[in-house]
Length: 398
Image (cartoon, helix red, strand yellow):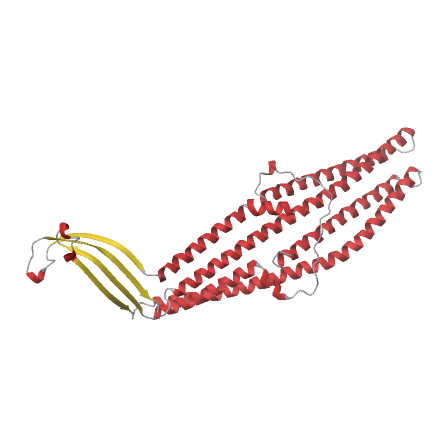
């Protein structure tokens, strides 16, 4: 099981998609953060036109060539650039938590499917033992029919029971193949190239102590992702509020400008300039107010989603813990039923061989034993599934 989980961590397609989404979120965070840095660029231009020098009264067409370095920086007094950086970073953190959630989901699915295969292996062994017992009974019935001790009706009943049990055994084989194929897909393998050999069901169950504190739910990556999303939405409300404050931009440029291309790089053609720009929108048609309302609505939505995620986490833990408790009691009772059914089947077989009971009594005892043994396997499988569910509900890594 450990080897299969390690294989799924590197080959599962869902796990492979999650890191790509995380890389996209981190790249977006870096892109948003870059707006906080000074912007420097190199530029050149060439223009021809009339009226460049109206101060000298010239209207003849002339040239103007320029080349230089420009820089700009928007003073972040009220957080117009620092604000968007924070929610983008929180979005990246949320994606990272979702990556862990995807890994946990895949690990849990591998464990559940693996345990389902092992349960079907155990059920298959039960079916094989039962088929062998029915074949033995059929041999005895055929000999007694040839001797005239039983009629053809008894022989037909045993053959019917044997054929029905063999059909059930084939159904179990089919179910195992389907579960094995599902496990192959989770592992990122082609089902036809994957084979999980049958073996005894000896997987040990981890002990889940009672009275776990509810703060352990904070270990769940999906809860952590929802929390980061709420914090990002809260930061975006602050970003929307900064739209009401003025922006200040500083600019500077230096280089060369000349009407003749041959004189462009001469020291006498040097030029420079500095500037500052203050911008404060007065009337914008309600754009800023709409942006703030949208940010608040998004925050309310994410907060409700976060509360829902926490409630779902509590429910999943309570469901699995309740199932474990009740399945433990059911398993103890079912084991008693299996022991009694085995004893009744063994006694019925001996008495049938001695002619003390009818064939119907023997077949009924065999049928009861088979049902109880299969039910015991089902209860055991549900116990393992519930334990895996508790581990996943608590955030994994148990």
